[in-house]
Amino acid sequence: MIRISIIGMGLIGVSLGMALRNADAQESPLGPLEVVGYDRDPRAVKEARGRLAIDHEARSLADAVRDAQMVVLATPVRAMRDVLTELATLLPAGTIITDVASTKSEVGQWAAELLPATLSYVGGHPMAGKEQAGAAAADPELFHGAIYCLTVSPHARPQAVEAVEALVRTVGAKPYYIDPAEHDSYVAGISHLPFLLSVGLTSITSHSPAWKEMAALAASGFRDVSRLASGDPAMHRDICLTNAQAMSHWINTMIAFLVEARETITSGDAAAVEAMLRDAKEQRDTWLASRPNLRPGEDAFNRPNQAPDRPNLLTFRRPKG
Image 1 (cartoon, helix red, strand yellow):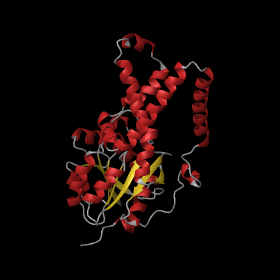
Image 2 (cartoon, helix red, strand yellow):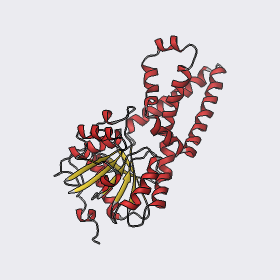
Image 3 (cartoon, helix red, strand yellow):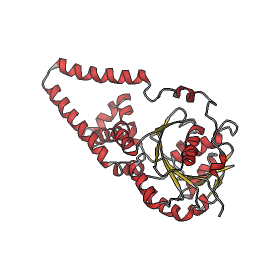
Image 4 (cartoon, one colour):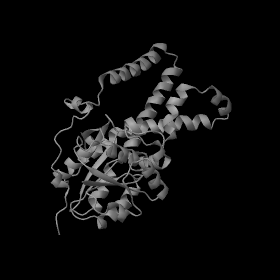
């Protein structure tokens, strides 16, 4: 039986635990498993247990990772450096470490700097989430059909990569291998910038002297675009600070677009305004129709119980001595 320890009992950590525990051991590429949960807040651990996300509640990090073959970090991004520092002295040779951080370059650098060569780190980021935070919002179906990015260190053992991919498939997600720097650049544009724009819209309108009157008029459009601003501030703080360069690029690009859009609108050129809007509509319609998150041959992974042969479970066992 595989023991997986999840460190951090927030939305993603609890959803991951629920998905793992709900998996059919006969169909899962991981086979039978047990899940241990830990969080600095004991109430979060108890809530995770109450939601059937974990088999065992841990009272300390050392307790959480004892006898674990795989450790999943689901804390805020910047907290992972300290956790990795502790894990370096707690884990025996052969343990696999992965994470669910929304930024990958800095976490990968910390892992390379802090972890001994006897441990294998494989970065991960499920492209799934909600604006709500915490165990109360957790959903075992959160990862089903979602792209799950994997960033592989040059020093990661092949067996460790297979094991983390098996975890991804067990929760119903689709593994997507990507370079850490590419990952951070891309998600800054399609995930982190939308959050910041949602924050910006909410901020400039809610602080307007006319907000009381405006709020009465706000309907579905404002609700939809401002939705992301309800996300966990601590989590998104760390995302911004660990991906500042890529975010700056996309912020500057958006500023340039808004300046150009302002000039086009104030010019009174109706054809130019319509062309700008039509181009965006066509681009989005094409994206929606093309399902670009599927690569050739990935359709099989959308069908239930269609996973490749499970990896040799002996690869999860630590060497003696």
